[in-house]
Amino acid sequence: MSDEKTSAKTDKSPLKSPNTLETKDLLKAFGDYLNTSGSDDTEFTGYVLADGSYVFLRSELSSTLSKIASESIFSDRLWVIVSVAYLEDQLRRLLRSFLSDNEISDEILDPNQNLVSSLVPMAKLSFALGLITKQWYEILKRMAQLRNKFAHLPDAQNFAYLIANDPKSASLLESLTSRYIELTNTSANNTTNFSETYQQIFITVYTLLQFSIDYVAAPQKRMLLDPSPIVRMHHLHGMNKETLQILLDGSN
Image 1: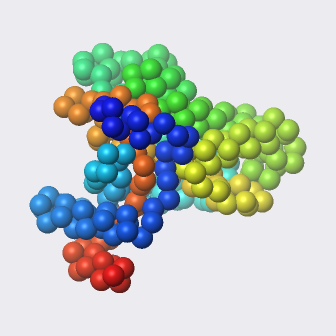
Image 2: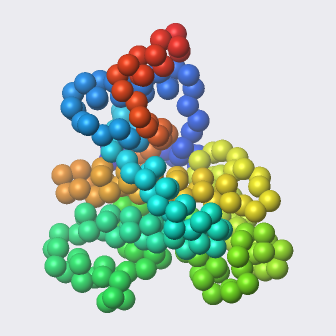
């Protein structure tokens, strides 16, 4: 990573809020990308990097959220357990993309082998390899702890129960929220049952891991990822050239 990118990321707010001009520039860049890529995909994430460049990557966020909602039936308990399984899959894909020997990599990451197959060990290895940042790791670790709370407390059906009946869990939720606010430089929704905040956290972490899978771990693109070069992320869903032009005309 260049010195320019590193020096631009010395603060504690890696994901800053865009202004109107920056959003317009990103939409213009996305239009150029669509004109040259010839992609038929309809969902992308646009990443604004610290050097002012843009990266556009195919996304499966909407389908992933739909699958989690379907499997969890909007239960806090199931939402956490299922969503963390998807984060484990993202980490497994990330490490497979980076590690060189497919057979050995599959053995190491095979959940049945119990070597480096659960979320926290995979997150530790990813951080050690420079594939995720310390901030991402700290959030992933707390999400794993939250998953374990729901998995091992039979009476814990939702976040409200954890907050009311388990001081350690309430402290964990507070710590997770503060880490997320520090990462995104935004305020999390202050909901009674924490559900909306947790979904915001999942979407952010899932999308950041996708960036690392597609843009960091690939052998031809490997870079150190701490500090993160990502300044902002934009979810671009269902946009074609005509829609982009309408948005750009409306911002003039």
